[in-house]
Image (tube, rainbow, N blue to C red; front, top):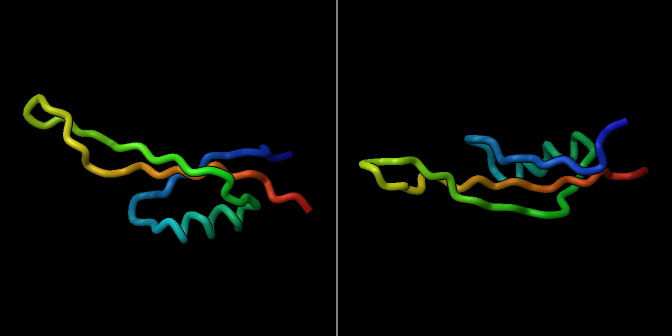
Length: 62
């Protein structure tokens, strides 16, 4: 039996649409979205380098 909810992260070089397609192929649909910045330290200062996007996937029943 698989989990009812799983978080899917948009991979490097993957579009949001491709991530949603991957979720659907695995039997999940998006029920929420979370974005958070990823920082890297340069010269002692945090610098944003990219945005991490994750989708909460819920199991498609039926």
